[in-house]
Length: 177
Ligand SMILES: [Zn+2]
Image (tube, rainbow, N blue to C red; front, side, top):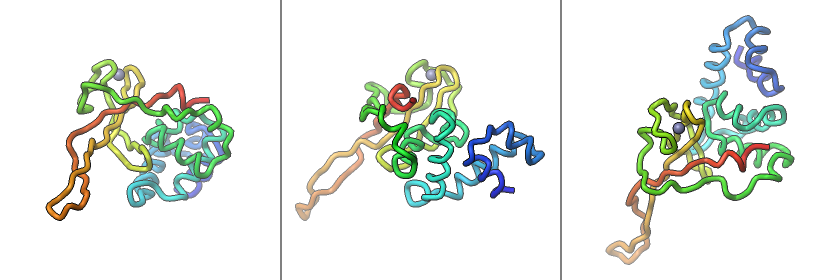
């Protein structure tokens, strides 16, 4: 079943339609997709096969929708498409993917609207998996990265240490077509 669902998903069928085709519920389709995502974690990113699936889906659906379906960050979708998709959708994408949110160091509530109705999602920035949230009230997406600084250890070698948490907002306007 997983293989069939993934095939239909890559081909660009609506989740509703996939469920109907294979006589399962939409929730079951989503569960299969999320299970596949979990299996596809590789090092601090995802496997090439997973990224190819995302890139194929990208030909017919918005990146935001794909991100929501798979429970991943739009930045992950973008990275996958850059790596495996055609470049069509990337033309309009600026480097301004994320904005640092000042004065916030956690994602307990949505930094934009302070809502508690947030979903934790897999996020990826600069090819690093990070913790992210999606806000069900305003639709904004944020993720955290460690703030680091370099210092010299006792042997005079440069080391990196974590000194805090930085919160970034994903700029959808740069990601969508
Ligand atoms: Zn919000």
